[in-house]
Image (cartoon, rainbow, N blue to C red; front, side, top):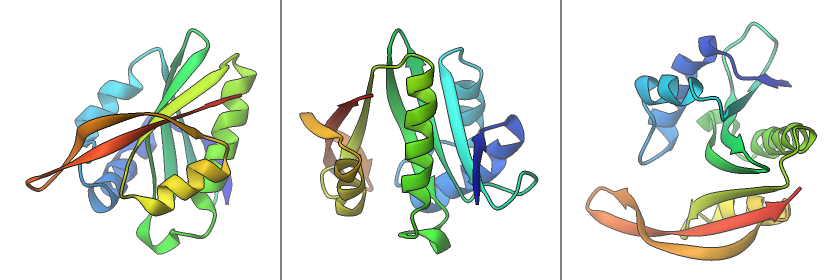
Length: 148
């Protein structure tokens, strides 16, 4: 597996992973709009440079700070270190661009993701009540942040 910058050709596969893995997925059009922004940074894990992504991280960065918009891994590769590798790569790349601080939101009930972020030194700095919608239920988000 290698980690490379996200390219427009990866967006359809990312939309498919989003739809399969996340309760409020970004669709292809949303992803294309994000990718057109100057602040957009994205990274994908692929078996080789010509293959579809196995996982990805999407970030908006500017002014010395960044926000992780989305992180996901294909279901068959969960808990195999793909997300950890992606995030470590993204953090190093962003630090190299001058990003000093990075933030994210994670559902309070997403224990695996929270554990991953805590292992990578993200710390809880706030809470957003009712941030996520799952069917008819609202779920709070924890705001987590770390310095680079």
